[in-house]
Length: 279
Ligand SMILES: C[S@@+](CC[C@H](N)C(=O)[O-])C[C@H]1O[C@@H](n2cnc3c(N)ncnc32)[C@H](O)[C@@H]1O
Image 1 (cartoon, helix red, strand yellow):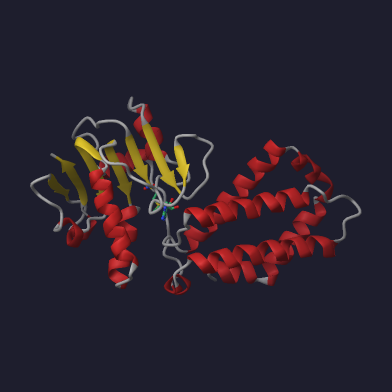
Image 2 (cartoon, helix red, strand yellow):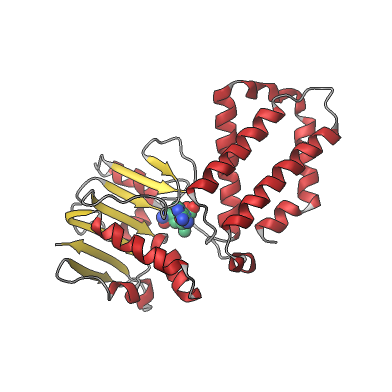
């Protein structure tokens, strides 16, 4: 079942209606704005995880992220008004409206192809694992460091901090209470020239880029532009470290300005780790 079918399914809708209705006397706690925001952020993240676990290539624009967050804020503001006298039909209407708004957002964001791919599974990897695959022991990184597509749990950001790095940031479409993690789309993020000492993207940016190339999609030129913007945002001596490799794109990198180093992970060259260093 893809995510849209899931949202349209009567069975899951009925179980959510039942859950909300049976707890209706408790939701007045969401009249407190902080509690409402925290519950809404939690549910927003649950929705994103349902999407990316169904199909890891689903991603949302910054605008859609704002809309979806506000759909969840509205939901919790609405259920805060429920009480013992609220009928199950009233709850059903709230859930149906909420799901209709989510489906409308999803349809705007998801490429037609994304409906077909199911079980393109998305995983998050431990900090240790990413550290080894990215060969982070090979050199001291220059700060600030940005982890692009850091995941809901931002394991590598935490690992980098444990290793003594201080200026460490992340970006992902998941909401995060850590203020150094931006909730947004990497394609909407402006990478300013000469800003970062290190940019990391483990199984994220280049994986999505490779898929756009594979699909022959128009979006690949947006990815190519962003790739070069990322390289330009490096400080001198700074490096962009990622996996999987993108040989088609790396062959366009100006070797007078950047060094490229490959580290093999398996016998498949496409799965290499790449370091592009601004010289
Ligand atoms: C396979 S996970 C990898 C996470 C982390 N780098 C790791 O190795 O554990 C890919 C991550 O990219 C995020 N993602 C996908 N498309 C995105 C986009 N356009 N902008 C921001 N994050 C995105 C997903 O939410 C997911 O957390």
